[in-house]
Image (cartoon, rainbow, N blue to C red; front, top):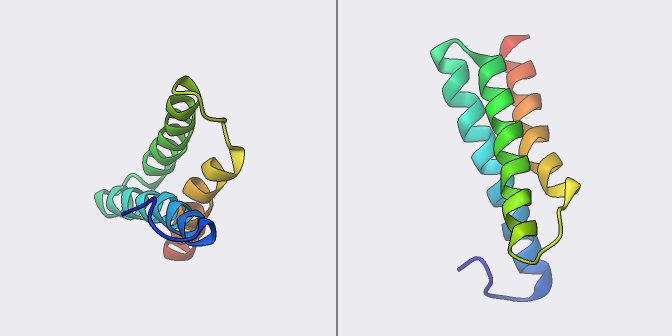
Length: 81
């Protein structure tokens, strides 16, 4: 599923998965009352995923980490405002 389509479609799906996972985890931990813990976990998960990719011959992409933590941070700030 994730690798099907044009290179642009694959790129968009890949970034969307990063963002949705980050948003989901951040929202879950915010509902538990631990928004900072959630954001820390989201950041750690984003870095871990990129380190995993790197260990399998890929590149460590800081942009993917940003796509994971960025939307999650915006969500938590908006919810806590």
